[in-house]
Length: 146
Image (cartoon, rainbow, N blue to C red; front, side, top):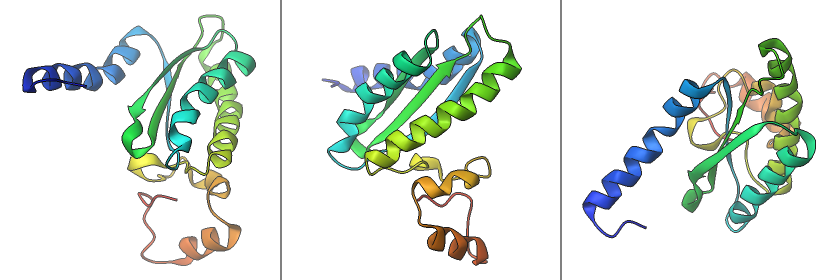
């Protein structure tokens, strides 16, 4: 924790530079997830273990604002995979991460909402009935969280 305003500014500068530094060093696949309450602290080591076990050779950068349960999971494309293969494998990895999030009573949306890319994965955090209801609603926003 920062002990002064200048330390807080330094920490924020480091935090804000993470995405830019990842993109500068390779090709990242980014996920943002939220875990409920006490489950959030357990999610970090379990996410890391998942990638170590199932996706060996993938560099993982985990960060977030665990105080509200948000976890940013960034995996870098290994040099051994071409971009198309990596993107295909990230779909499998997403399902594994979403299952882990569901087991931790979390959501697949975090602070930015579902968006168009994640709408097919709503079943991990919503019942089919709620998903259909939201799809029919004229007020439904793709920024809505689970």
